[in-house]
Length: 198
Ligand SMILES: [Zn+2]
Image (tube, rainbow, N blue to C red):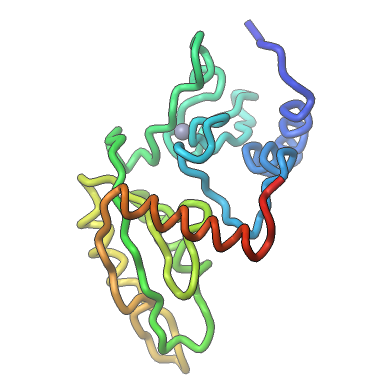
């Protein structure tokens, strides 16, 4: 049974059918600022429960790119949306831990976009929104896979003058609380510079 949608959702669906990311289009409608990053965390974005829904042509449905659940299924509750369990690689583990990476200071300019892309490609970690500030990138993971993620991050390299150097100079392990505190600080710094997202 299809449910009533508001017009922001309808516009976002239309944008998604034309190739724009659905959740991102919805956030744009809500004043989402792309400079803030691409991935939300469940705690900061309750409307989507942390899911990243994208249009899936074969089913004509919206599906989360992280946990693979369909939007209609996630929303099929009398209460709030079922929260995203995160990437499949987390193995359904809903606990979160964080790594704070320091980008290699030898790099003449930041390679953070490719670093974040490499991390996402591991399937066991991701950079939430407001993860990047002052040469440091905060990465979310799950306790069962974080050691493997740290090991893989240490192997990521960048190229300087055709020489391979480590992309990060240090990897610090943080608890969920410490990680969220850093996200809150980064968000505050973002607001100080760009203003409150509308
Ligand atoms: Zn999800």
